[in-house]
Each structure stands twice: as C-alpha cells, then as structure tokens.
Image 1 (cartoon, rainbow, N blue to C red):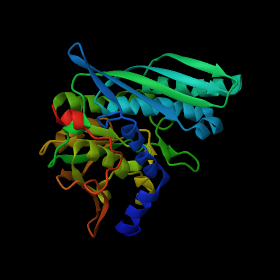
Image 2: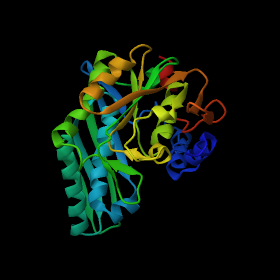
Image 3: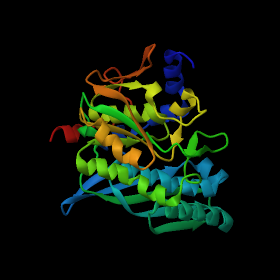
Image 4: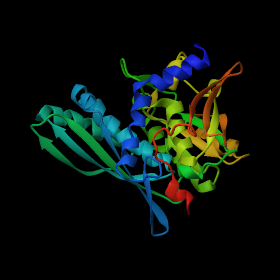
Length: 317
C-alpha cells in the first residue's frame, strides 16, 4: 500500500473528488442547502424525503441500460441514507432513438424491481443527444440528517460486499450478485437505526468514494474525524486504494452517539451486510486518515470549505 500521505494526495486529485468541489456554484448562485443529498420536508407528523440525480451524459450514451440502473440506485441510496423508505421514482429521459430509449428504460425497470421501488411516472423526448435524470420521494419518521452528527460520535461504515466492478469503472454493484429479496430489505437497516435512535446521521458512499463522502458529511455537521482506513469493510482481493475510490451500490457512513456503535451495526450484520466501526468524529474540522502505523491529513475544512454546502439554517434552529 502507498503511504497514507500519497493515498490522501491520490484521493484529492481524483476527478470524482474534484467534481464535488464544483457544488460551491450552488452557494454562489444564492441557493442555501443543508448539505444532505435529499431534502426532508415535515408532513403530517412524518417527513417527505425528496431527491434527484442526473447521470453523466457520456455514460448514458455508452451504456443506456447501466445508466438507467444507476439512476435508480443513486436515488434509492439517497433516500435510504435519510433513514427513509422509497415511495416512488420518476425519470426524465432524452434519447436519440427508440433503441436507446428502450435500453435505458429497461435498465430503470430492472433496477427498480430489484430494489422494490415503484416507477410512478416520467418523461421521454426522442431525437436529441442522450440525457437522463430521475427523482425519488420517500418517507421517514426520524430522518438521519447530516447536521445531527456531533464530535464524539462513533463512525461506522456499512457495505454490501457481494458484487463486482463494471469493466474499467469505479462502480461496484451488488445487483447481480445478491438475492432480490435481500436487496429490497437491505435499506431497512437504515430505517431501523434511525427510528431506534442508534444513529442520528448518515450519508451514502457515492462518486467521491468513502473519504470524499465522509468529508461532505463532516462539512454539513461542522465536525472533523479520524477515518481508520484499515477497519473499513471491503471485498477480498480489492486493494484499499481502489476501495477508497469506489462508488458502491450499497455503502453508507453512519454517525452513532457514543456507546451506540454496536446497536447501530446490528441491523446491518443481521442482514448479512458488512458493518464496522472505523473512526470517530471530533471538533478539529480536519479529516484525517489513519492506520496502525501512520496518520495523514486529507482536508482541513477550517482552512478551505469543500463544497460550501453547510447546515447554516439548521444550526440556527
């Protein structure tokens, strides 16, 4: 394995990590967000969870079926990260022809069926360069909001390790390797820890990988953390360097109050998922990577914000 300092530099220079920094544009345009990947709207004693994702156009063009599946997976992960159950998904597809549209829609239908979310509507435009977006709504009783995380919280990582990488990609998908009935139930682990109070914040591991996704959670919470990278669950024969830059179909970072780590891990372990404590949040505003031999700083939020999407409004309440 490379030194941690080299590993931190590799993470910072990755295209996916750098692309998240462009979210600062949202702040410059005057939109203030709490930093979570979904919005939680109070509604009749519960919360409606609303999110949306756009798929990279080159991906939509090259592999429309996989892009359709990805549109579902990313939205369902955003809803589940809030401790919510998906209610329905709508898609917005632009395709150059019928064959491309069919492949994309088949991918959406396939993944939605595997994950147990209904496709309740959408929009299709033919005869133009490909583009695909989707939006999902869910419901939560006690949402896992990023700004709830606090210094002293135990940091856990949960993954499905049954899966495979797409050829030449950072995407690790469990959709073809884990039984459908398990795939549909896996996300219920987030609902359990949210409703029990065993955890109070979470974020899905997405394009920037484990460390980049954790950094987004820390920025929202106004915290720092030590990420003990050797404790991260990962598939056999997958090097740590690759895993840290992986976008898994099921991967979550969870902040549990002190002393509640084992309780928060149990719903994942009971389902045959991997979950382990891999660090702790602190008040330094610095994300550090650590092993049994060394420590390296990945990012200092006090010196330089990452996305500028912080929970200013939530903190004032």
